[in-house]
Image (cartoon, rainbow, N blue to C red; front, side, top):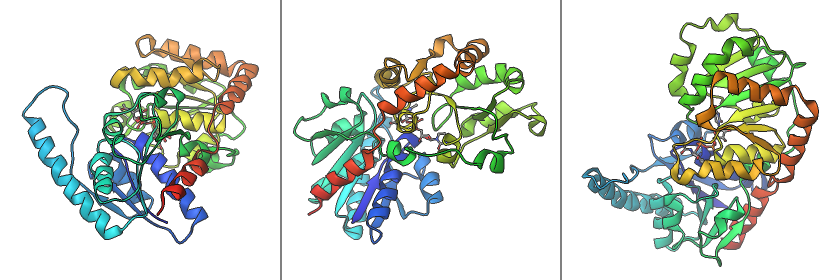
Length: 363
Ligand SMILES: CC(=O)N[C@H]1[C@@H](OP(=O)(O)OP(=O)(O)OC[C@H]2O[C@@H](n3ccc(=O)[nH]c3=O)[C@H](O)[C@@H]2O)O[C@H](CO)[C@@H](O)[C@@H]1O
């Protein structure tokens, strides 16, 4: 298969596309791939790290307010459709997949105009602007939440789940944390991260509770997000920490998740697809800064079945963070119950399903 994928801005739109590519590579090893993103988005560094052909277009998001900046945005959008068409004509994909973020709008739209079959993947319970715009033109729409179905033309939409759920399903613990971070494989592990870019309020709470975390009988890994790392480690002697590891970003998230007992995170759709895909208990702190408060909706689908606990960003402090973690970590039955409930709602066959949709579109 010749597969062109596009999605970006944040990791939540990038990793599902990469999971899909990885799966297609496994089932059709002769396949060729092309990733189209922007140079500025997280995709450029993540995709280059994966050694995947990468082409970029220059585009920026619309401001919600009426500003002169939007004139530049429109000019860039028109130019990026032209550039996308050129990339598509050169690569000649069988099918083009968009996984959200504004970069996929010109790419998928351009593909549609050239008569190439198209599919968009919406990770969230409330669709983003790019996917809503594209839904009129694409051939197929894959979603991850039942709640998302109503936003799209019914004849095109299908509930598949997120490919990251299948990628992490069935992972088992290994020595990764000992080998990579010199942590103790005999101890339970808590992972704390604020989505792919990090989260200021979460890191403030973590900073307040660091001394306490260091003294716990579980160990903690903290991924701060690249922009918060320097502030976070100011004044901390990292080598002296025995029980806590602080990192700017985790490149091998699957290996870390495989060895995690409880995760504390924002409620980004791809993150929670991972937690449910592998049956991992979580404390979810929805970001208050996203459109239509979609992370609270994402989180509630886990909370209502007992797979996760909700901690509101407005209630977050060092003390509330520690208490919520301890309440779960000190109760092995609860931890097990949450894991079981999480796994039940995971879409462990998401990528296979998505691949079947692509095969049906392939001319
Ligand atoms: C602020 C914002 O707009 N957030 C949105 C963005 O979040 P964001 O990009 O944070 O997306 P998600 O939480 O869904 O996914 C983050 C991804 O990055 C990975 N990861 C994270 C940290 C790290 O150190 N290493 C690493 O590999 C996670 O394992 C996961 O695969 O896209 C999501 C998916 O459309 C949305 O639901 C979120 O609301």
